[in-house]
Image (tube, rainbow, N blue to C red; front, top):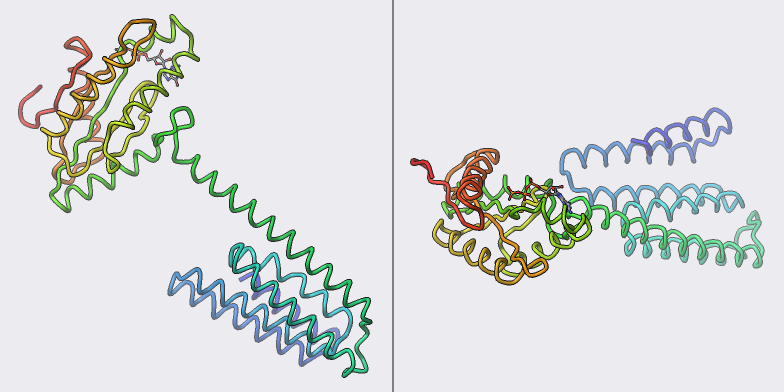
Length: 322
Ligand SMILES: Nc1nc2c(ncn2[C@@H]2O[C@H](COP(=O)(O)OP(=O)(O)OP(=O)(O)O)[C@@H](O)[C@H]2O)c(=O)[nH]1
């Protein structure tokens, strides 16, 4: 849409101010093409193809303009709009190639027409300067697009990861829980949802300080993560609570896993000789229920585990109370 408005405006200016009908025709063609590409994108949602079409339309417009301007010195300046657009729309690799090819073709034409067109104002020195500017533009935008993409990837990673422990964060767990419940209901493969809570964690913080508490959280997350399947999803649900999703797992298998995790932590992590223990609340999902309901069930089981002395695994039973 921006290209449509811009091209239509430039076309109108070319008609009104300069009576440059040929150049205006290229501008209006470009405006029409950008509307067609916009409709194509709305219909197909194919961003990659639409991006290539936009770059092709820009290249056509630039090429046509430079030819129509018959070698006027100012026309070459328009080529400098290409690198930011090509890198932004096509990414670092394809943007690099398109920019490099467009510059090489333009420079070759300039050298070729130098002797052919009497109106051409470029000397060999001017062409060399233009080549240098092109190379700098190419390098700068390549670097800029690289760092922009790296920063975007890092932001994307941070938006789904718990910064302290490096496992999934709450927001990612919300999405995973929804999709795994849906999958379990659709495939009839049971999903086991496990809430895990560190026992008496407040005492760790109170006795040894928050930094030590943080280190314990990291230790527990690493230990749990290393002992579950790659297809299981572990995340920090909040504070000292973790959520473990085990797809394609029966209640019996889930209970065995939770029991082995409980024993491992109690036997391997201690704070100044005192064993750290965890409480587990499990529920099995076999049909479509809400994520809130799955958590409510696991939480009820966890509460029962805490209530009956901690350091144990409790299961939510659908029909009878635990
Ligand atoms: N160090 C640290 N502590 C946290 C973090 N998040 C929550 N906590 C602490 O976790 C503790 C949770 O305390 P409680 O909810 O009373 O639970 P608890 O002491 O483990 O008791 P039970 O769960 O009943 O066994 C609080 O002291 C919080 O400050 C964190 O990111 N880092």
